[in-house]
Image 1 (cartoon, one colour):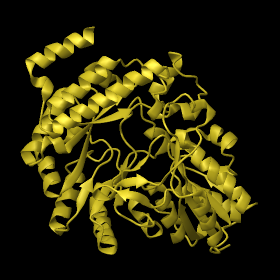
Image 2 (cartoon, helix red, strand yellow):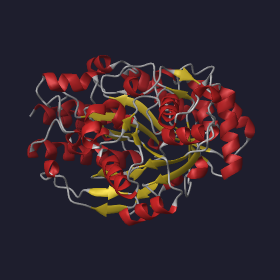
Image 3 (cartoon, rainbow, N blue to C red):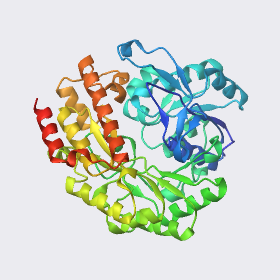
Image 4 (cartoon, rainbow, N blue to C red):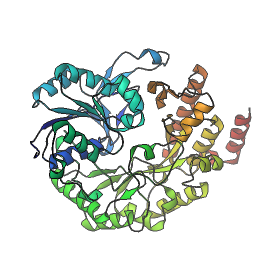
Length: 466
């Protein structure tokens, strides 16, 4: 049976959380699936519940529309407002009813502790489109399929990379002949993400590889993605040029988890070719960059290619902790990376470094030491709160230490509430650390490296011991 152009509705659900921002946050996987299914002959409609931003910040980022909602009972003790981010429920209902009636609905999911978004979408779809099969994929569905089946209650759950799996499922649902479809042989055979379906584009996202060769103790990349595979760098450049010409948008955010791997033949080649195009691009990397691969040539290419957002994967100044997590950098490597970037023309205050807090067994002293180390380099701290992710080494460690239960409600793994420190004292301590990092960033912005002074070092060492 030939593809008969079945109508499909793809949905990016709301976020329910204490805070959420559009920091180059496009559902790239869902947009890839949309374009892939269109290529196969399906008719695709799309609703992005996160909708348009309320206020635009730098480089196309901004704030999502925010509606305060009741906190789930399990989060009642957290002294912060809880909100649904994205369009109103009425606007979503109207959007569903205004589109051609779908023969299947595909819903993505991101953070495990954001499952209320997919859950609410499924409830409304059941009401408005009774009998229509609902398919759930994405990160949450891949990491917690049993929980998703019980709580979100879709008809089908897909885990891991989605394009080929969703095609197989639709073949079965609609009784199609799979032999009639064109199966890509490489990453570059897939069509570009369907950005034309996304309203109000202020930036575009790009991925040069899928997967990650590392196995960090706190990361679940190996559970949700294919093995590490890089695209042809010339094809990456071609895609950026085509999208710039089509949308006239300058800001491109790399979604790679390991952008600098094989850097001589990959990212350096991409940057050289982009420089040759002379396009007025601005490049960004929301994910942490592996500084062990950053050398003088790469730093110079980044500067010449107008790489604006640089976030380095540092995590901690504690060497033993870093080796335990999976060593991607040393303290000396971090110092060298900043030297290369500043020599290329960057101001240290325009560079960010991820520092992680809340890891199982990690004390506050280690976090403060790491913040101070970054400030001494004149760099901004990007404080990342640990979230226990099922299937990771650190999740298992937390369970073994009886810090969390193996069947913990995903809502309690929200990084905002520091699930391993739920006492009021623990919450307050980490709130103060966040304030401390903000003060250090203000100092860095004014080019003040406070703790390089010996007197401040003595005060800090004394306070940590008390």
